[in-house]
Length: 573
Image 1 (cartoon, rainbow, N blue to C red):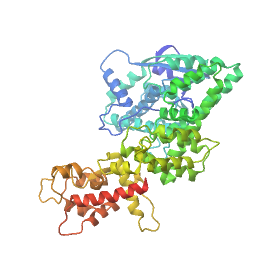
Image 2: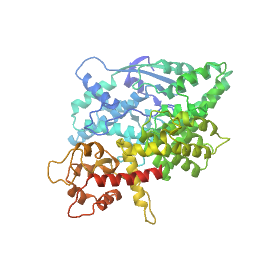
Image 3: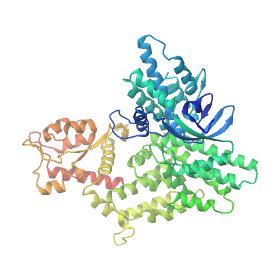
Image 4: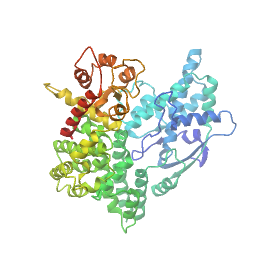
């Protein structure tokens, strides 16, 4: 490869691959075509269109490669841009072929055929390969375009590839031949610079200090690069270096495969932080880069690098199971995940997967959910870590017993108010907090749990309803926030007492699907009453109204329902 070249020359006659230990595709596309949010893929296209009216060559930045021999290269930096270029060109060539086919002429000109072979595919040789676990989707959906559905896509990165291709296809669907050939010319003749290395150490150094990336590197990426660089610096011989580098690459291949399946559930840098807490057995670890750099500054950091890379890989493997197959299989795990904001629980979960049977992991999730619900409802600023850090430190592979955790949670729930340091989450404070205004996300969670409680009463063969089975769940105010204009509307008098004490409380909240909520928002109560026929809590609201001729939802009924929900919450959490 030439140091200063064009995108086309860079790719022609070469095979470029994203190595398995590198990040998969991470650029976002607008989910809806009307979405106004700027994404990397959207900006990519807008930048091209802005340059279409200039004579200056477009500049695609710098690309860093490791040469693998026989015209094969690993892309170390620039894979996001390069993946997007190939996706865009594949969509562009597809649109060109459509136009030419309608005109009954050759699908691609001779020059365009050569460009296609240089940049996309020549015979069976594909020019660009993404990470191995996404390559099948990339080939079938983008390169070959024989797959048109979204079934069987297993990773979020593969979904991003598909969404990017769909986005470009849609954007190009009404473009004429002149536009397409102009875009093709801009991309293929765009300037870029490359640096090719044979020595991995040099590639890693450049990766760390390069700043022209489409997205800034995550802490996890920085740690990976630092680890590999430190191995090059401190290895005693080439055989040891190759062995440890191979170990790191293999572990990070597993890590990135896990990330691809769970990144919509948890941020990778958060997992890095939680792994740090597990590895050093302290909930007080808050600075991953600082802590790891201190370890790397010691005389011989090789053992630490090996041990911590292993810990990272195990954390991602455990959380991949937790957030995917186990979350689907075990309702109590699904419940904890649905609660959200469970960061304090994750280090416990990581430890649990190292030594507990699944039934105990499920029980642990229920215990942690109980504490976290109270913490979220009460809204105290008290640091929960200080109340459970000692229990976390005792919870190890050699002492994998959840009984101390259960005892601590029960103690916090029943602590006396005079023991103020421990009593923030006790029954009295929890019950008092449930009386007032609850944040909407927490209220939705509580009502979903309440819905399952109602469904379970007196029903044999009861199966709980998962939160994701409710279509776009929203919080409905039975008595609307704003008093309906029509009278009589079937609600209590909208005086100050009613609006401040009853409108925004659990007794007046109802869980509905988004479409249902939108259809009844400000309706008089008699109309809502007729429409409450789906979830058990809707039917319960109807049962609260005893007089069918005088259907009024007043403060007495709101109070009665609120107390019933509070009683359920006190028993459940």
